Amino acid sequence: MQSDYAPIRYERELRIFRRYCPSGRVLDVGCSTGAFLYQLGRQFPGQYETVGTDVVTEAIAYAASKGLAVEGGDFLTLQLGNSLFDAITFWAVIEHLAEPSRYLQRAAELLAKGGHCFVLVPNVNSLAMRLLGNRYRYLMAEHLNYFSGETLRRWGESSGTFHLLGLVSSHFNPLVILADAVGRRGRPEAPERARLLATTTRWKQNPFLRPVKYVYDGCEAVLNRWKLGDNLIMILQKSESL
Image 1 (tube, rainbow, N blue to C red):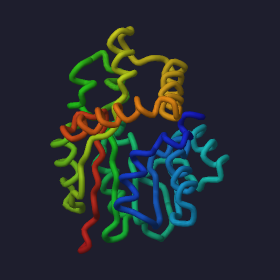
Image 2 (cartoon, rainbow, N blue to C red; image 1 turned 135 degrees about the horizontal axis):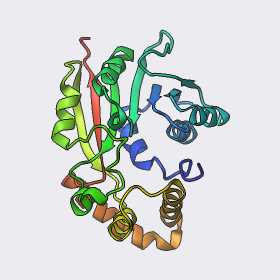
Image 3 (tube, rainbow, N blue to C red; image 1 turned 180 degrees about the horizontal axis):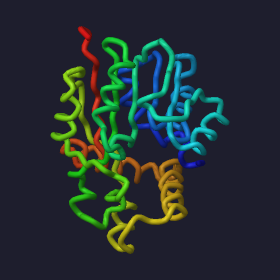
């Protein structure tokens, strides 16, 4: 929880999100503990009205304890009021869904004309995936869909409701690559994942490691230029004519 709420946790997503949606009504689908919405409100006070949804009761309860407006239940059937949203986000959600196109269509119904939809998924063509293959921790049973840049683009445009504004790769964690290369097969248990995330967060926040961060940022920029980052982020816009 502490790592999830660290200020750096959603810095990439926030940077991209703000470029397209500087204010407005925002729905985060699969919001988990609410960390993205929390950072959005904390870093840009008064600029957004936010709502989160999730099916995990404990996560929703934690988000509510932080003062966030959240709704528990299936996004496809939830009643979210009569006001349309300016932006809907799916951060690491679509890969878990058996019928992802139904969720994209539902998002289209809830978005205002010209509204934006943001989708983040693991990148099947990432450097980590190429190096590690089936040793990579994010190759897991609960991930039902895997996307390359091209398949994600085709899926995003398949409904005819959206047009593509941007498709980029993001994130690079050399500690994960190292740990999975030398460690045992299979996804690490939750305590180990939490320790790794906490370590990564602590290093990024350490001012004495700033030169290392510059090198890291340069490596990530090169990887993202060739869409080899760990994740893909797609930005869609609802047609003004619908």
